[in-house]
Image 1 (cartoon, one colour):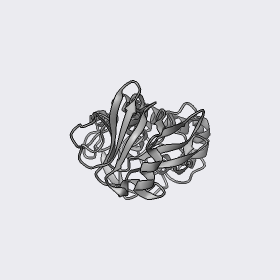
Image 2: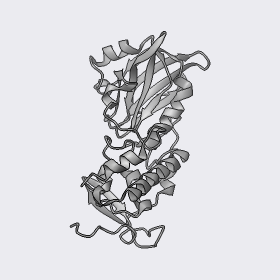
Image 3: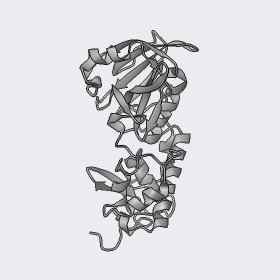
Image 4: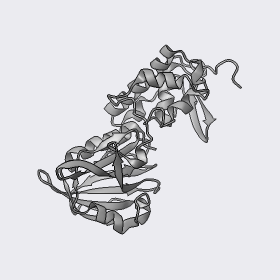
Length: 291
């Protein structure tokens, strides 16, 4: 699933193309991709045609484009959830069809002229919806915590909340109500940097260690953003269909059976919560007293 860096790359790519654009037409090619919109495909199309788009925003893995209102703050937004394989693609009008396109928005921009935004989604776990804004955030994303690259992120407060958790630190990092935008890939990378086993209970961390872990999370996310996100296949691409390069910089995720870049021990891949965790058995030892 795309995590914060991948979604932020898409948001930044959309921004200059859609900010100030008007929606001239909407074509829903697969109604399953508007299942989160109340009223179905016809209602979705009616909610967008003629509306003007504002600067795209993001929190964690959620991306939305506010719908500008004349003389007032936006009260609705086009919410996009990329799911496992969703793509937001910018295309010239009449460009060849993209595989798995589910929704097509035809826009006109005062500076850039006509263009299309195509939502493509092979696995159909993502979708688009027009949702009301609550304090500037779509209602479906209002429970999501701030993410580590947000200027308002309070690392000290999050560290204190993390230290109240009996659950393992990886599960805590993936809890989007504690800190958003982190998925399996970047959790493994941050824990490798911090030399922490994924099962280490949050309550065993000192405040300094918890803050160091959050700093490592931020560093990993910043590096991934600089390299355009992580692409293992053609399902994650930016708005121009290009892949990210952070997969070449991974130190832990996907490296089971390979030498640890830090100490040379053989990395392991272990089952964890219906997925996998990757760690160095020497650098990231299981805490004492844990089975």
